[in-house]
Structure formats: C-alpha cells, structure tokens
Image (cartoon, rainbow, N blue to C red; front, top):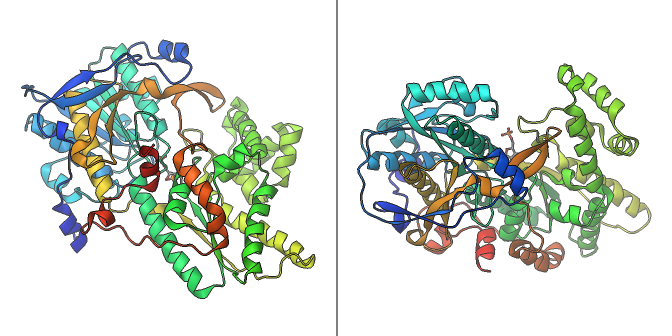
Length: 546
Ligand code: FBP
C-alpha cells in the first residue's frame, strides 16, 4: 500500500496516556448510580446492569491474567480517531498478556451477526495508527436489538473464545451495546460488553463524558474550510455563502465552527425551537442581517446552518412526530415505492400537520416522509436546507427591494460540509483521547466490567492528568419514543442555551453579523507550538472553564 509522507511521519507518533493507565491499575468504585430519567422503568429493563458504580482507575499492583480474546465493532458514521481507539485497545490487551488476540467485526454490527470478522495482527495495526477513517474493519449502521441477532453473536464470540466485545458508537449504538450487555449478563453467557463514545456530532456528552471523539478533528477541519471560504468571500465581496454543517439534530458542530470562525450568521436549532420560530422567522432573521450589511455596502457574508434545523422548527417538529408514528404503522411496512409512501402519509396526517406538509417545498416534504435510518432518525443530511433557506431569503429580499427596503445585491453559493471531516487524520487531541479510550477499555475488560462506557475526563488538562475510568451506560438512559414506541435510550445532549459556549456566541453574534470579523483557523497542525497543535475545541474550553 502506497502511503503519504504525512501518514509515514504520523505513524511514528506515540499517543499520550493518562498517568493512571501508564502502569497496572486498580479500580476504585464510587456510589451506586441512577439513570437520568424513568428510573423505575430503566431498572426493570436492565436488572443486571442497572445501578452499578462509576469506576475510576488509579495506579495499582500488577495482576496476572490468563490469555483472553477481545472483539471490536465500529458502529455508525465515521469519526476521526476510530483507528486510535483500536490501537489503544490492541496495545492495552497485548500489555495484559501478549498471547491475547483482538478480532474486528467487519462493516459494523452486521459483522457480528453474519460472522464476518478478521484478526487484527500487529502488522495490520501498524498501518493504521494515527490515521483517520474506519477502513481497517469498516463500519455499518445495522441496529443490534433482536434476540436472534444476540444469539447469532454469541455463537461466533464463543467460537473465537472472545471474552469481551467493545462497541464504538454514538448514543444509539451505545444504547444497543447496553441492551446486549444486559442480555448476555441475564443469560450468564460470560461475555462482557463495553461502549466507547464516538460521533462527530458531539451530542454524546453529559456529566460523565466530556466529549465524543471525532468532534474535535471534524470541527477543526470544517473550520479550516469555512475560514478559507471567508477569505474568499472577503476578497471577492460578491457572495453570501450558505454553509450547512453535519451534526444530525444537535447544533454543536455549527456552534463550535462559529466560535472558531466568527461568521456573520450561525443558526442554532435549539434556539429556533426555544423561541418557537417559524420557517419564515428564520428567513426574516437572515434577510435582515443581509439587508443591514448591504446598507453599509457589504453584499457578502457567511451563514452557518446546522443540518437538523428543519426538525427544530416547532410546526415541522410536530409534523415529523406524526410522520414517525404513521411510518411505524403495520400497513406502512408493506409499501414498496416512494410515491405510494407519500400518498399513504398524506392520507393519514391530521389536518394541521397536512397543511404544514403541503406548505413545504416538494423536495423537503418528500425527504421528511421517506425512509428513516435504522435507528428511526430523519436523514437530515439529505435535506438541502442551505439551498432552501437561501432561496427563501432571495424571495424575501426581492419583495423588500420592490418596497424600497433593500438596495443591495444578493448572490449566493452553497456548501455542505460533513463527509469532508469525518475521516480526517485525528488531531493530537483526538489521537491521544481515542488511544486512551481504547487502552482504558482493556482495563475495564480486565476488571470484569460489562455494560460500561469507557470514559476519559479532565481532557483540557495535559494528558498525564486525564482521569480514566468507566460509567454504567444505564446511568445515561431515559425513555424516548422511537419508531412509534417508548424505548430506553441514552439521552442525547443538545446545545444548552444557558451553557457557556452558546452564551459566548450570543454575546458576540451581533458584532459578527454587522462587521466582517472573520477568523481563519487554518489547517490542523500536528507538530509545532502547543498553542497551535494541542488546543481543544472552544466548546470544551468554555464548558470546562465554569
Ligand atoms: P453518527 O451519529 O453515527 O456518529 O453519525 C454522524 C453523522 O455524520 C451525522 O452527522 C449525519 O447526519 C449522519 O452521520 C449521516 O449519515 P450517513 O453516514 O449514513 O450518510
């Protein structure tokens, strides 16, 4: 395999570990835990894995363990650092006993069910250290939730003599990891299941998890691109750039990029919902900023749009909730064509929601009514919100022009950044954080834990001071409606409007809207001054400063 010079140099980088993981560990247990919501129901659903204590690792005495094998699964969307979780786990498992083996299940959870796997050998591992992507074993979105899948899984786990399975995923995949842990514990199958917090979306975080891995690198990659666009924009001074950013429901990515780049406008879905804004309110907000800049001769600017915004406009949110219920009806399961599905949906919607549905541009309405991903999510990355909004702003400005309220020009360009950042070579932060998460998972396994998520905290401090341990996954759960039914799920972390990152943004955005206060972050640097190479996201800095 031909590899780039950067890849070669980067392969030699030895990721840092927290001090507690640099030698043998002892697990220190905290008090019993409770789930974040619906405690009685979650306890009943997870009798074997509910209420376990938070674990913190401290330096301890060496213990000899018989050899054991471990399996690993990459689940869901790619996020920078996945290969480092695997290399951390690989090194951790080998450090416990060089005879231990690591097996990767191919193309996500489906690999476990279909018995599609490969051994991760030292030679293979070395080709992927500190690289982006999930291509070492591939990823997939198969949802692990049926008993029959769990039973197929145990067959191959037994065949390979696997003692523990590590599932690297977002909130949905870690929810499934917990269900699997509970199932294997209830059946006394003797296989442990450990989760790892992954997603560029940044929405898998809470009191215990500071950030999901990949958020740091992805946001830095998008911010580099946004900065480049802002330079171009400020050079030609003739376009408004509408930039949609991945992130699914939550606006963490858009907000972080706004903190890094200081664009003229950044929409925050959670605020749109809290202020009960209509689509027209959002359009008016942007149009007013465009008109105000035009009045000063500035016919250019940048608008950041979180990809999930459409779901947060209250009328559309209500519509989506009803659509989800309709799509979960038994009759809907036999529909074979998109047209048939649209007719079915129209025939079942309530009067108010049908009116909202009909008011949407046909392409957006169709996307909302069509298939969900395997976890029941609307596939927001497929909705071209950046074009929808710029089209509606143009229409409004045309009316204002006619009324003499807008005298400028409005030329537009559109961008969607998502896939560009998900497989970027991990920043130093993600390289260290991910390696530590993986290494730490090996210690949770060695300590016999199951139903835990690997966590590393205090990550705004130097790596040696990071705190390693485990958190019971049930602790993060509550009940939410999915595919028409109430299900136990990890609570998604949306942007908090009283949180430090949003407050900082809100305090500065009026100036950023009017003036051209762009910041150009430039590309991620791996070697050089620490203030350039080792900074965490602004979100994390602001959150941890409290
Ligand atoms: P995960 O939640 O699985 O980490 O995926 C994140 C994400 O990149 C979202 O931001 C985006 O909406 C979605 O995946 C896109 O899905 P796909 O990779 O299937 O196109």
